[in-house]
Length: 119
Image (cartoon, rainbow, N blue to C red; front, side, top):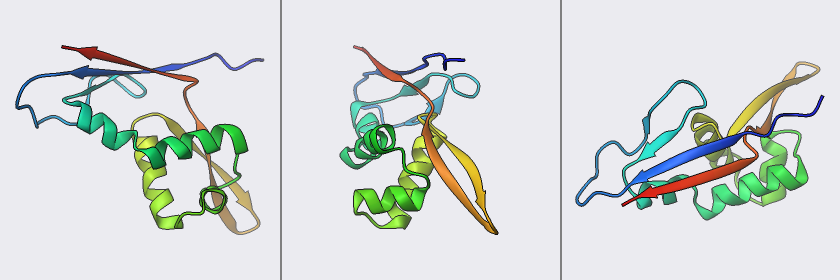
């Protein structure tokens, strides 16, 4: 059975002088998010996090450690970025056991991302 394509929606509400509510969740798990400014969105989708998403899509690493090696980055930094992307529903972590070792495989949870800017 083919996987159903999913889209993650992000809404930017541009208001003057708004610093509060950077990452407010609007609905249940996997729902839309409301960002109070473009800078907050830029933090979530930094160049390095975009590289992580692209690498997961194209290289399909078997673990976060493998992802860090492909990217040439420190494991701890990659793990923090992966956890943040998971928190906002852009990734899922699949648990795989290899002997006594448990590995977390990052998997994209959305096929596309839609960004709406409300001025």
